Amino acid sequence: MRDITGRRRWLWFAILSLLFFLIIAVSTGSVQWMGRIRGDSVDGFVPYLEERLQFLMKKHQIPGVSLALVYDGRIVWAEAFGYADLESGRLLMVETPMRVQSISKSVTAWGVLSLYDQGLIDLDAPAGAYLKNFSLPPSDFPVEEITVRRLLSHTAGLPLGDVFTIYSPTEEMPSLQEKLTQEVVLARHPGTAFSYSNTGYNLLELLIEEVTGRDFAEYMETEILRPLGMENSSFNWSAALTPAPPTGYGLDGSAVPAYVYPEKASGGLFATAEDIARFLLASMGENPVLSKDSINLMYTPTVDKIGIYSLVFDAYGFGHYLETLSSGMLSVSHGGQGTGIMTHFQAFPETGDGFVILTNSQRSWPFIAYLLREWARWRGFPSLGMERILWGSWGLAGIAALLLAQSVMLLTQLFTPKPLRSRWLRALAALALFALLLWSANQDYIFLRAVFPIHSVWLWGAALVFAAVLLISALSPG
Image (spheres, rainbow, N blue to C red):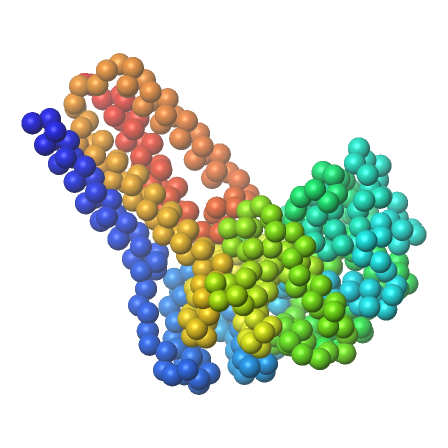
């Protein structure tokens, strides 16, 4: 009889879990209608994509998105949707320059390799050899092993750097050298591990200025951006930018006015989606800036153990994430995340395909993953690494469903006698979970919440319900 009761309990638990999972999946948009793409042509895909966008932007609360599509080595479509500013109702335009965040690193890598092509730098020379007016701070690790190659590939041992401090464009802020003096502190021995570093790329910014004797933004505009046809791009913010860059929107939907950083190389580029598409095209054929050998260097894996990024990508080259798909094709990409902004590009140099997605919302990772999935599906590409974000969404929905189902099961056993030791353990577990939830609610940034802005709320709520029921169960007479 006890075995039958146990089986029934497990059956009800499974039914409840499935029910809650379906509720969460439907409410978060995880279960979606997959429409039919009308033919293989661009004219068949674009209407389908525009139709999907309406649903996805509403579900994920994305105010605005600017897109550009590269097909067969040509920009075949570019469009903007939604709002540059919700309060004023200003629409996002194709011509609106947007902060592209860490996509800037991919462009900066071109700037560094242009110096390499000219014979002005050696990739394996100590970076300090090119810094005449800046001294690397003393360290327990050998600073002379911070090479240009390691800075480009995030293997120089430098920390991430300050990613939260932003400035109004009219506000006084520290100089690049002042910020580097604070942040260029070796966290590990150079060359031993991948460690994503804004600081490293900002040190490359200074290196470009020292080697050329020119302002970084001016050098990049003259030698990289304009030769590649990126007429609506700049590393300098200006009040004359027209249309004005959009307002960003944080994880909670709060508005983030346009801002700048003291450093530019790691995340300071303003560009349109079309200009980033032109940047992708430059590596797919002849270009007036870099040799083919240097482009191949960028797309050659320098490090394949890339920590948490291994969940999505296979390796890192110079300023680009790399993945080799099941078909053997190489895909190169980079994304950007900042306060109120999220961006991504994905390209297949071999086939001449690329997709650029710029959004003014920090809630955009699942949204971007959905768009990439639809694009890959249309082009017949194997599953992209970014699609694993969608798998993670399903996983979080499953965990939340299990917690809610277990909460119901605990309530049905509320007045079942329980040993005192079991009640104490439940109470301690509930209090520990309450403490964890309270801590997480007070954090400015949590990676899980940034990647899964909708599903993490469901998970947090399910965990709160479970903690409350667990405490009630511990305090109930039995």
